[in-house]
Length: 244
Image (cartoon, rainbow, N blue to C red):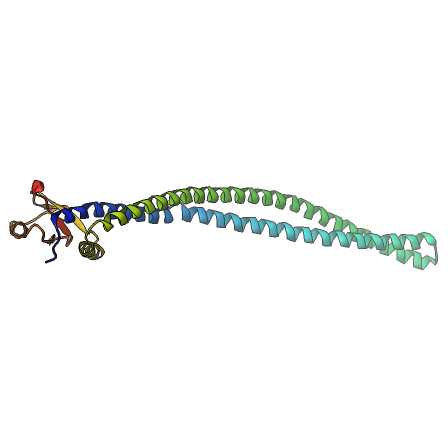
């Protein structure tokens, strides 16, 4: 059975309190990293990003279509101007009739192209409105994501700062306890999750359970400098006459 002065064993409770606080801070950090708002916020941002990209692509495609239609209109108009110039220059009646026929066909073609141009322009106006709305939704999603990240980062920074302070305090407390006892405590903490706890009026604060008469008798029979363990939780039981 390990041994250590009762006064040294009593210091383990301060060490355990600090370890419990460190554990609580670690759980707090984990909870912040897994904040339930993160997933839906990320999903909303991804959806808004996709919608904005799709809206941008639709506008680009419509603009390309408009450029093509405008080019076709210009080409047909140029041919009409050329044929009209030839028509006004005069010539054989048969040739002039052919030119007139071509001009009429080209004019009809230009009219159709101009109608198509108007249709693309109207569609482009609607797509640009959709693009603007998608961009606004994306900006809103980005702002919400950034605000949440800023909030969580601030809390994480506060937890990290507090943890560093507690860890430094723990080092001081552990350094003031006999190394051999700290070694026993550390092994117990790693294995059991709790390193030390009070034995208070027959109850182990490590397990929260009252010890059996037999276990209590065995512990009371141990020497003051004996390191005793909770039969239920396995942690070191720190004893004090006023707690008995």
